[in-house]
Length: 188
Length: 188
DNA sequence: ATACAAAATCTAGCGATGCTAGATAAATAC
DNA sequence: GTATTTATCTAGCATCGCTAGATTTTGTAT
Image (cartoon, rainbow over all chains, first blue to last red; front, side, top):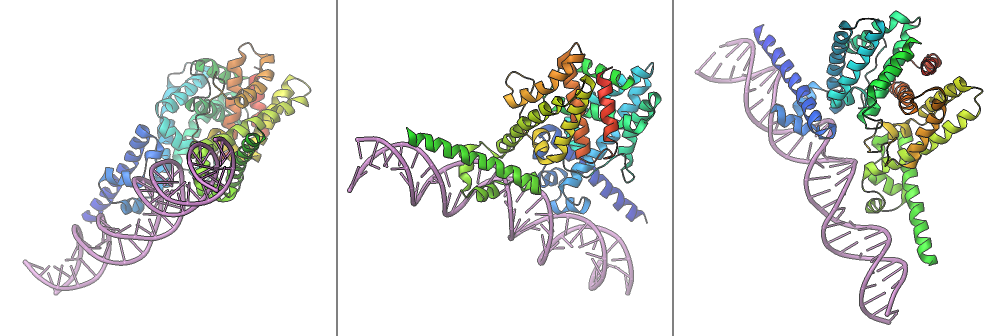
């Protein structure tokens, strides 16, 4: 039985290597540079092996995105811990969210701008997505009646800021001011 | 001189035809279906002519995006006209913005999710971008001190809602509630 | 140890993409 | 009418995602 165990472990390691290679390549040279051929070379296997792990290229992008949602959830949970009050908690959430998008632009792009069919706040959503959403909701719910709608709105505002910043469409300077506006708006 | 005039006009018409074909194809079958070969066939010229009009494929996407910004600006200006007061104006703006994104998903995708280097709210921005931004700013400025930051924030919230709706990541149902939250937030 | 079955992996290639060099046709100038 | 410039096309390169079929490696049983 130990041989099956070993095979399963090796397969899992190889799968992680693929996702890690995709992520590294995307961070370094953008998602256009992430090709099956390059990934195959990086993990030192031929191209068809990748298709025994993932249905297609998009599924690899989705795997990176899922990793990203897990890490985002962690970052949000951590950020809330150092908050003194409710308003501060919202500010910390916003700061952590935008910092994540800024520090991992390729991952953020995979999470939101690449063609995947990842959904969240839905029944069939992956746990990483639900957890990231919940990390926001647990704070937002403290100051509102309709927590679901308020969380969606808060998330949308943060995503909008992150996306417009990422694509260089709003000034890089006035970030704190915009965050304050969003947070104050949430408390209205 | 009339012959040069005619040539210029024909070139302009052909360029419009390219952009229109790209837009139609994207609306019908998504941006992946927009290939140089298909566009060439649609306008009944060989592929290299497209490159005498646009530097590369992305430039064609950017042209559709620019058209979109012009139309969005118009829609926003029109929406404000039927508003009774300031708060209603913000609501109308939000409604028109989201309706635009919903009715022209491919164009909206070109404007925000496709790889272009279009910027706005900057010196070198194209007039269509500036005008769309101004359409928001003219309303937002009435209730805030720092109009630039407030407009950026309002835009980000609307874009976030539009983007998360477009990708099926928030419920389709609670739109009005979310819009109300954003608008109330702006008045805080 | 050896022969065999099954699983894992690779080689080679298809159809399609964006883009371009060089040949050809059309329009203009003399 | 001929020559030159301009406009356009044909043909092809390198690369892409993906896959069928051959081949090697692995595990099992004698």
